[in-house]
Every structure is written in structure tokens, then in C-alpha cells.
Image 1 (cartoon, helix red, strand yellow):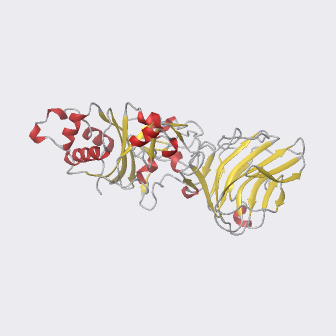
Image 2 (spheres, rainbow, N blue to C red; image 1 turned 180 degrees about the vertical axis):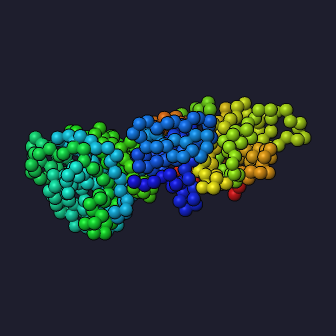
Length: 448
């Protein structure tokens, strides 16, 4: 299993670093569910005592700050996440065995990206050598495994297009049906023996395939789900036996998991909640060069309006003037990725205001405060990208451990969105620690 303790951004030597439960899903956002062999290092600026591992659990990593502990698991729907499987190096694994129902429906969305053979998934019982259930294909056919027997169907999936593929196994009629895009494309009479439970399930190349399979093509998967029935299920309905949720899956490498805002079952967001908010939140990316500093404490002390109104008019900074115009301004959270020598940090600052201000005005005021603060001669702080307005509790289904924050984009201005009240104009994703190093962050229009 992939070791995340020193992952961060491998090309730049960053290690994972996040602050308290507001960003407790950081580990899941980067890697998927963390297991006992997949220790996540978490360093908190908040003075919280380190939790002691329970008997039989994985030991906590060495402390590197006020608190250090292994990541908790919070299950949430992976509506904007797809599995990217390129050869046998990349695969997802079901974290725990499940009891297999006698009759079942398995559905998965498949996108064949390049020519050649591919493996969507395979389930192998404890002592099995061949799959008890599986789906694979190539340029000429689709193959379904059931109870170690391979059933071949002479049809293919068009490349570059998403296809929903479902298997329905009916023990009562001893039948196996293959459906592609809601149409039955093949059926076989099969033995009525039950599939053994609590085996191993892989998305992509299974361990046995690393030796026996030819070079595999590139395939992407989405919404792997299983139900204990033969019913028709809604396109975005999660599985009741196995679901497309972070609690079920681990990955062998970070590149096997990718966000895609064009996937059909992403966040369901409400423009009216964004437009009628009484509290306004903003996300500001910064870089910090300083060794041995409590960055969260420094930023919280600098970005506060307490006492700013008393400065003489002739000596007021941009931040002093800004504070005179807002009733409430505070740092809600700080999330950082820290270099191994701890001299550099890439941070995201979450700010809360009681009134709506322009992002350029906020950026100018914050930059003034950060550069003119006591200690700024020893600490270099720079705003590295666009200040973005973010929403809280705007979208349904956002895991509570994330704080409910999302970042949204649209071709329309906020005023135009609020007037249209058309949710199709709004594209939102969960605000997590990955956003700190997101290469596709909106360019800073305030400095262009």
C-alpha cells in the first residue's frame, strides 16, 4: 500500500500537513481510505494532545509539532472522483471483505482510453486462483468472470466514451446478464452456486495479473456499486453492499485517483444558499518562508481587526482602512503543506467576514497586514494566487468533517448567478488541502 507519510508533493519534497478537524478529510482527499499499513502524518498548529493508539492499532508517527496522530476515516461519496488505471501499477483495493449476496447487481462506469486489453475489476475468494467475479475486455470482446469461468461476449466499448456496464446474477433462474448503457447485450445460463464471501476485490489489475497479463491499456472507472437485488437503480444511487465511497477504497498510488468536475454525480449545489449567506468566506493561498514558527498563530495575530480602528489617520495602512469598513473579520482556519526541512510552507487561509467585499480589496488589505506585521522581517509571506470566495453548506452531500466548504466557479458573475438561479451555471468542488497545490487554481486577476 502506498506510504503517504512523505508524499505531499513528491516533486517538491512537501509532506502532508493540515490543521484540526476542519480539514480532517485531507488524507482521504489525497489518497483514499488510510489503512494500518498506510500511516498518514498529520501535524496540528492547534495545541491538542496526541491521541494514544488503541491496542492492536497502528502506532502513531513520531511527533513533529504540538500534535501528531494517524488519520481518521470519514466516509463520503466520491462523486467527483474517478479511478485512473494505467497498466498494473495502478489499482484500487476494497479495504475490507464483504458478504456476497446470492443474487446481485454490479454496475460500474467504464471509459477505455487507449487500445489493448484492460481489466475493470476482479473479485477472488480466499483460496481462488481465478476470479469469482470480474469484468475485462480488449479490442474484440468483453469478458465476464463468474465462479472462475470466463464468459466471452463479442462486443466492445467505444474508446473515449463513458459506458455504464452492469452484471446481474440471478440464482433463482441460474442466469447471468450483461448490460451496457441500460440495454441487455448478453445472457448466459450459469450454475447456481453462491459466490464465496470475504475475498479480495480490485479495480484494475489484480495481484495475479501482474505476472500473467499482457501489457494492459489505459482505462478509467467511476461509480463501482453493488446491490443485493436485481432492481434497476438510479444513475447516481450509491451501492448498499459496496459503494463509491471513500470508506471502501484504498489506492496503490496517488495517480490512480483523480478529480474530474465533469463527472455526472458530483455535488448538488444551491445558488440561493450562496446568494443569501449572512457570513462570507474567502480562501487565500500564501507561501511562508520561516523555520520553527507557529504559522497559524502568526497569521491569526496578523490578520485581525482588533485595535486597528485606533490608528491615526495619517499612519493607517490599507489593512487599518479595511478594518474600519467591516464589522467582523477573522481567520477561520489555516491548512499547510510543509517542506521536509520545515523552512517553507504552502498554506491556504480560510477567512470569515460579516459583509461581502471584493476579492481584490481583501487581497490588498491582507498583503498590507502580512508584510507590515511585527516579525515580517524574519518571515517572508506572499500571496501566491487568486483570493477566492468560497461557500459553506452550499452543496448537499459534503462530508461534515471538511467543514462544509466548497469552492465554486462560473462563467457568470455572482450577481448574474443570483439573478438567474440556474444551478447549471455553478461548478463546485470540495475545498480540501489539495487546493493548496492545485495547479489549476484561478489566476490572480487582481495583479494582471
